[in-house]
Image (cartoon, rainbow, N blue to C red; front, side, top):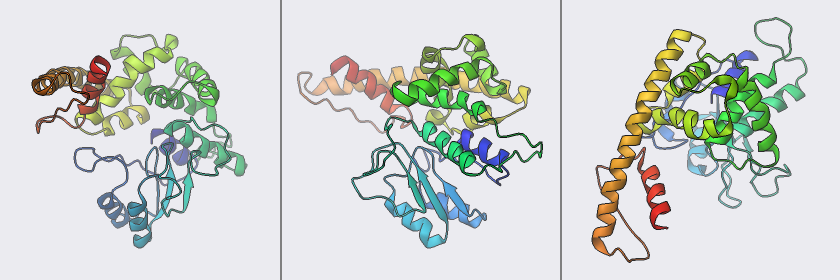
Length: 289
């Protein structure tokens, strides 16, 4: 979302980001959000990393007269594609794009790349006459690809390698601040640092509250605001770690209280936080297979 908002805005688009709150709206496209966006005068919605399995929501957008472009890297439901203005997903049946492993942010990057290739007249809205610096987005591509656990092979490997170089010399204030609270040097950041230190902090806000704080961190040019947001994410990440540990212990007690030798173990509780329940489940899977 940060990548597309930055790129389309620089190219003169009237654009803003919208990230669903997982506690109120769940993941991805939802009809209430489409209704509110339409009421606010939005003409076009572009999804990032979601929407490929949202045929009902796509039909709802069409009924509202809202144009919808779906960009997603998840597997579609066979040939049952959403009825959208366009569906950009290399995993859809018959898609000729050779690399099927791009993350959601990689697909977004490809959209911007195609816009620039197809419209040679595009220059930044500042009127400077300079071409859009596509490489300036690669830091976000590296962040999103590694944090989304996409396989670092093929095109992903190239994009992340180039993206790490961009991170080392980034002008993105939020990345400086995030590296600072994580106690790592920005010019030495590795894929491992993204996966275990930067990524979890960026994900923490969406798991506990709203992911908008992470979006703002990656797009702000105010170094004071960036510092505040980075500290907020660092605090939320510690809270997320504590919640995950507590939930894992509670779930373990529940699952083991039935039949510890069962082939399937179940743990459910109304107090489980939906933002971190997947993390706890993943750790229990590692323990008990």
